[in-house]
Image (cartoon, rainbow, N blue to C red):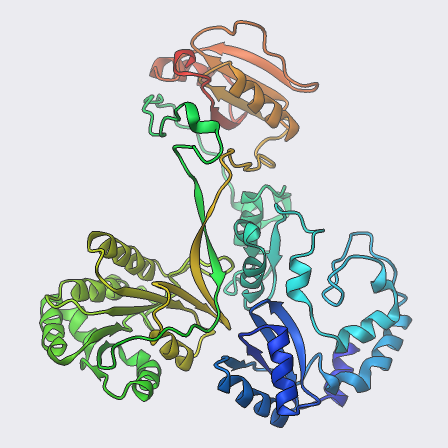
Length: 539
């Protein structure tokens, strides 16, 4: 009913995303005198959606562009959440009243108010929902959402997951999205993503369960090789830890004002990147291209390098667009074709004359909520990072984009130099930043790993670590735990109520002991093996 009413009475209008905040967007609307344009969505502190009549939205767009604010039109047929929706508010509320809405049993966080509550039981709320702005950023930042919450993005584009990560960096590792290539939800990848984040899954009704088969655990012994850094006495003190852990988060940036110092680059581009080349040529008339670069590169890396050397004689920089519009993951008929972007980067690195370089890739940056489906492109990032580490003076920028970014946006980004690595996603401009990770061990969930008929084997010790693991396993459903160590425990180890703890004498570094242990356990009963040595002496 809601959609039918809007389609019949509110046709027309347009929407566009602006890389700015709500206050500046409202100021631009006032400056343009666009009374029927409104801020329809507030995605974050750096991204809003404007909505209204096309002519008025065009006037606002001119004001924003004059203030160096990027505006990207959306492919919508209506001006949702704008004054153009006013004519259906009363009818939508009346339709909601006929549906007899009631308070939800599960708390629902409203994007109209950014709060939970019973407001959804009020028919007038659904009328407001048609016209009022969507406070998506405020809702994501609401205190009611705990830090460890898992966010599932079921939208067709997956862009909501990216916006969540922008608003709550702590949720970046807890995002699961429905892959746009999946045929029907719930997909196996989505379910596995939930499982990896500690959400219990009932596999019995899934296709994965029907295709699953049991496999034997390996019985080769542990090698007792230690790779972890040794913590010294100051390891537990704040700011004195010899080992600092950090996570990479992608942070939103403004449009950027720093500009490049060069104007005559040589552009390396395949035919598919022609729109980006044309957009760059409009900004830098002095740029020149290497003819048939991708074909030459594919046929003969040495010849490609020589062509590049010749082109560099009159160039001030290199813009490598080989990764733009290249073969996708499904186009794997020619394995060499998949790595043409890396071959291009290698040719650039081997050039005798060092000039600033900008490499553009597609689907290489591991941005939360974004599909990382181009390993060949990711290899370019790894190669360039290594090159910069080996030659600190080199200027080599990396720009990654996806299918939501147009040629004008990509070409504009090439002319900036404020960050060495940038990811462009829809209307977002993101840069990787390091943040400190708490020194405590991660709390990876064991939920779903154990069941009432399963056995958990804890090998390597009977000390405090093993005791804590017993408690966690029992809390997550384990009913039988077998401790494995060379020497018997100093005192009996008991599990929580409902969990039986047994002890087996064996050295996990001796093959015969491991094989004997495997034979003593019921076939197919072991669901989890944990190595938890209390110290080297007790293994």
